[in-house]
Image (cartoon, rainbow, N blue to C red; front, side, top):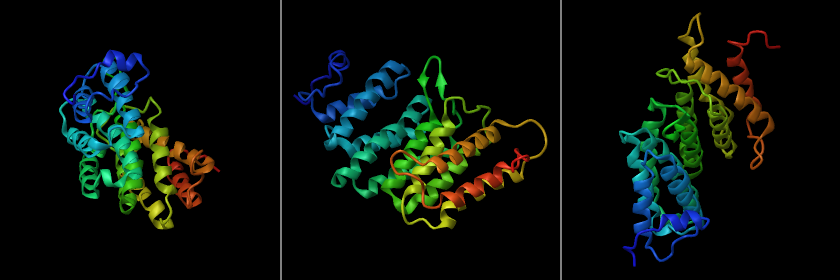
Length: 272
């Protein structure tokens, strides 16, 4: 029975009930193939919706590590939609792995993290939406994965904060955040900051990278990367003041917010 094909018409028409008669390895293979599709209905509406729900419910625990490996390999895929959906799958896998640690060895998580860290700040196609490909969202999807990695690998939290800084200040772009990427990135940073154990210096140190990026700037039109950074910092300030519905306000919110305002005074010199 493990070789049976998934009847995707029945799955999508039946509120994504798990096709228990099909073996988990076969389901993982089919999901993996669909998650690189340029058709957003296949990739997003079907494959990702199914994968997220079935991983969360524990139906794919048997192949959880293999799904993480497949996703991590796609950070070097030639097609953008394959690269940008990889972090979404890893986010789901990491969340489930925290509930069932035996399903994913730490060595695998570290391997996935290495691939993610190499990809996230370097991705060149950061469009949120494409009229043909649908949602791409490299920045937002990567932010979600960064927060998941921080929960799975607490020793890498400061590294992940720096990755977020490098992402928002990446200068090789002409895309201005238009699909709430700034909010998703700010939310991820806030989640990372919420974890206990960070000192004030660790919670604010990543902003040195942001400040340094503006030291190389000068007069003239605001480039896309600077616009994106200012937008993200504004959103982060809001998140730090309001907190998250689940988790509240980070321990060093005041110190981080003060550093954020200090950087924002560069463009907003009229602030009190």
